Image (cartoon, rainbow, N blue to C red; front, side, top):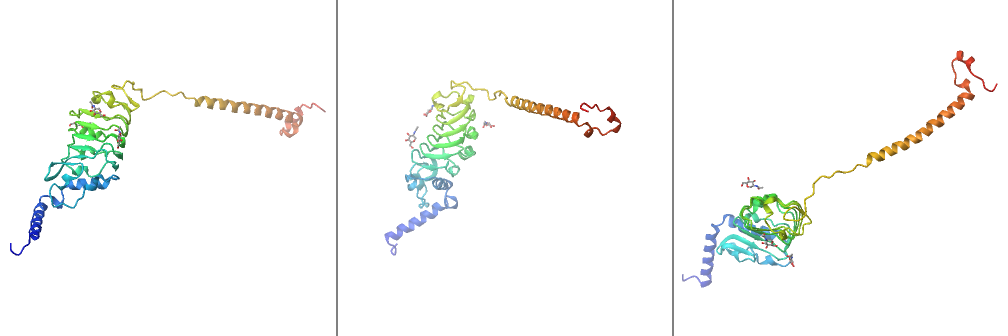
Length: 280
Ligand SMILES: *[C@@H]1O[C@H](CO)[C@@H](O)[C@H](O)[C@H]1NC(C)=O
Ligand SMILES: *[C@@H]1O[C@H](CO)[C@@H](O)[C@H](O)[C@H]1NC(C)=O
Ligand SMILES: *[C@@H]1O[C@H](CO)[C@@H](O)[C@H](O)[C@H]1NC(C)=O
């Protein structure tokens, strides 16, 4: 050790540790790190909440666990347990990359300015999620029916968004204990499987109906009175009136002309003697 200074020794140790951790993750980065990179990239972050997400210490296992809003299964392991990014002023679509956080059980994106539809495949992307809070954003479109396959869900908070269409049947979600879709633009009946939740968690959707909402569901089809044939009939009668007058006038003119100028109209000579001359 004679030829080495203290600084050189520290560098040597750092190099060794980085090369050993290099082997513990494939391709140099774990999927969970890529998950956070994609998520950060897909969102606009005016408040700079995600500025602490700096991906340069990739040689230290678990370095992402110190990022704002990231909770890991173990502090020395880059494996995301949950993301708490509520009320951070985040903008953009439903974030990309979440399917790479394969061990994530909670996702809180509430109180941001996220907009647009939820991914159709959300149930494949968040297969083990137990807690999903997307409330108080501007998400729109239909609530994906695939949510029914997220069988570990115990909390689903979708209130205060712009979801429309019908609420999908979520009968398979036997662990669901907290559910809200209040303050959206949903319509139609509340599925049987969700009628056990309190009225307050459905309010603010004027076109929802059936229990637990007081309003009765209307029948979907109504009879319409057809006015059109009557109008066509009237117009036809008017045409008839006009043509009657025309035909009568034509008959009178024809009669008078034939009466005074019979030679112009009678071409058969044998009939000429029978012409009745009125004024000769
Ligand atoms: C929604 O979030 C904003 C902050 O982003 C907050 O000011 C507001 O009170 C929240 N509204 C509801 C209904 O939670
Ligand atoms: C409910 O679960 C069963 C079996 O797990 C599955 O076949 C069915 O498609 C699920 N229903 C919905 C609406 O996802
Ligand atoms: C109703 O919604 C609120 C959020 O608005 C939630 O905290 C509560 O757990 C929900 N209740 C049930 C029974 O789902």
